[in-house]
Image (cartoon, rainbow, N blue to C red; front, side, top):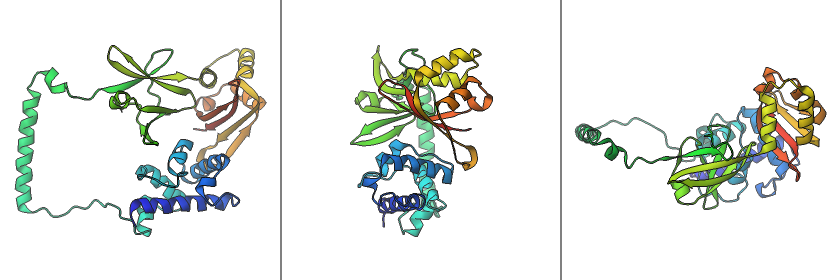
Length: 302
């Protein structure tokens, strides 16, 4: 059994593990509902203290066929959820081929060859270092900056997840390490963030930038949670304007203690008296209606 086949087996194990808590869920990934996916995300987080995004599940678990193996750290989370120590431990039980780093004896001839290669490489590096600086660095790949659409300030928020779409697959990018090839190839960029929505590639004087458009109401909510606004009545009025009357707030408590539920009135009361605990809240996701009023909020308690 190869590793991709083992991943198919893990997908089935994940669904079986989820059905232990929700026995009426579908036995096939293609029929798993969006509600089940949200509940699965919560169940995984409660069991592993790690969170998997909804987009990742739609990309890797929902499809019947997978072209390649997902990242090992994500496989580790799913394996722990299925009560294994790690992906390697799970793959071992399914007789999958897992590369194991072992130190093999090196013959004397190879040692001589490696020493020679090392000396040659060092000499080449010293030669390059002594070249004019513009020559030494001219082929260094420039990274693409990510900026706010309105303020034009650089964004370094680690909670923002960017994905590039390649052959109907989403590949995650590090916000601090995006290569220029992403914009040069005019790749489709997908944003996953409760505070930013649209991603636009902007080119000014040959400088390439990915610009993210912030969501106004989401940003206002973020400001209310993290600022020290003293005028409570004004804050209540502003919150009333951006929050739906049917608001649902789900707060994931620390140490897997469960989820606290709040309605609009209870949530507004919390935010009108800001505390240090509220400032440490991390917004995981937001949902809005057609009028852009916030209808659902998921928050992680830190």
